[in-house]
Length: 441
Image (cartoon, rainbow, N blue to C red):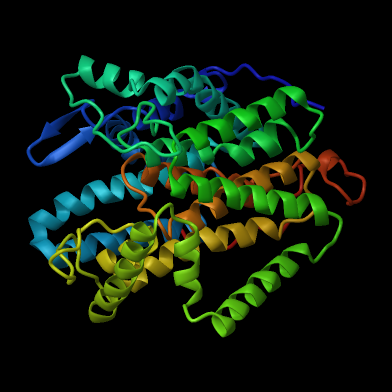
């Protein structure tokens, strides 16, 4: 049964105006923005800058859920990154670079954390996000067939920006940019909507024709990017969705999955002359040259982390052969290399800890469970792909926003009448599903 529609003030298509502006900003080429000294202010950065202090006030006031452990992890990571950048470039340079990093990292997380506070909010976000991806097909399908970058070049041309750079075709198709600066950005943005379409809009029902049409639309948009990273995001989500569908009635299905991953890892490690990482990179990239480059990046990058484990190297250069590019196509490695292992651990702890805490909640109604699957599987897909691509600009803030957008599943109250498997509700205030989470502030 489809969720009822809600009309609320201060929203666009059910999504808070500030979130709608944030998404609009992510979809703008970098030519749309202003420069203040050495600082580039893109549209989404302006939105986050304007909202940053009000969101901090909102967080500590407790008006949209009291501060908890995961808020502390997000702010802690941002603080350590600031210290690392000051250590690298001095106080003034560190404050400039670290300040905008804090706004992007903590601001994006807080935007999802504070403005997506219920199932209705989450469903409205899923509906708007998926419709954006599907709606762009009207421009990106012709782009793939004609090599005319309608959205990117149209927007960039109107603002005096440069046209899309030349990138070789793959599979006989032009790699589509959409409104973004690179096909990888377009592809990951599209692929991240897959679980939202399948679990929230289609409600896991293959006979939900409207919902499944959106699922197919998201998969088509991802395919048009012709990029390995987005394909990994999509395939990982498809895999865990298929696993959940096949073993959904088995209580230990996720422990089974982790055990399977462990067995596969050990099998590759024992019977291959390459490490599991080398095998993964080789088979999840389009060319042997690209795979070899990522392997070298991992080797030289981890060596750099070993030399600077606490505060990293900031935005400084890293040791590598002179013929290697400075592009680091591994988001997780880059975080550790730039800001140190403690900052990396806080980010990993934020994401995995929040997923674990949300997964432990019991008695959720079916629509909340589907939302939980959609959110966790989306993050899983992006997390795996981030080992082979860098999440930069729009992808970075999208990732942090998506992490924050699932925090409501951790601490949102549930009406007693909707609780599954519990006793009949008693008169009085609605009880919590679990004891209140530990408060740090």
